[in-house]
Image 1 (cartoon, rainbow, N blue to C red):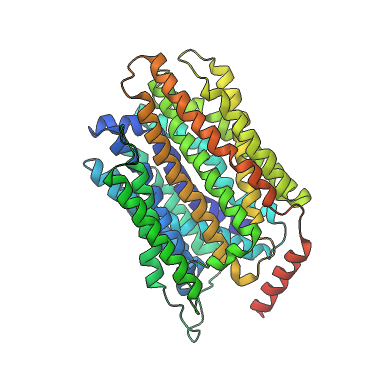
Image 2: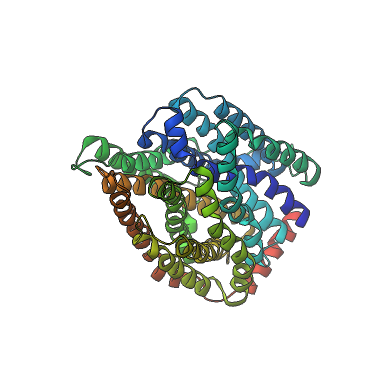
Length: 471
């Protein structure tokens, strides 16, 4: 179990570092590539959308290739996307190559959860979730600092070259340590739900694209906003209807939403993704644009949030197993909202010590806010439903990230439009942080829908199902 966990964590760090490294480099990329911030933010948003597009394919691909070979293949593609991103010649080419990276990353994250949950045989879900979130916890600590150091000492292209050792070592460890779980040659091959793929993935991409186009005084009342939003809703609704009438496996098993734990977990992870990724875009920009920090300085100031997330990981996993995810999630989301409030009152001269203290508390809360609902999603599920639950939770979190970046970038653009002094810019950032607080606060009462106590019987059923499947 631990050998598999370490193997998967090494490869996953490439994906997580890539996201957090780029988050502190948006200003530099906009300057170096001579592109507006509204365009450069698609370096992050396009990556997250690509992640979402391939997440639903993870279950099908695993059934065809096996977890070991799919993990190695995804690392190879991610390596290729990293090299191409480093060689990009303008903003559109960089965005395109980031999409390649995101496509590979989308396969890896739900696959990591599925492999570890199956290895644990349904027991100690909180501790398993703590292991799975190690890369997410380390990313905010080391990623911004690494990104700042790279931009301080070298060219921006090294932001992507740095992924090479993680990909190479991760693939080598996977070849050595992951079990060969390829399906037997005489086993029926899983068929890809092509119709579902053509409905679901473009649908959510259209929704996020529409949100990113909200700008100016017209707001939503423009064709470039309404057309993709309405089209996206139609496509997602069409997929839901298609999936519910399927007699064979749909791209995503939407029937799992009948489980209250799955539905509430997905909703909370969506809102948590908005809070996590949206703030990861706002925070370094605030330190750079308002406080005058360079990328390295912004990365160093973000360390307390990552340290808090790392420290919370073990405790959150233990208490999720001991008292259940409901209480842990309720306290965590409430604390995330409270710890974000100081940033809504920021000025150009707000004490850095106060902000870093708030970031530390916010990191602790974010770490717990991710672990508790992720663990809750697996409570009471059958062995064969684990891959679909992994896909649903990862889709929710990554979609929340894409929405958070797009929506808060638009809000920030509206709030800081015409602002030229640090004080005026700080007011605009305060407005964007108030929106982040509000979106997080919505999740607090929804935490009460999660399971209140651990259900050992469900874990035993999962272990029994695992043993039966192996037999």
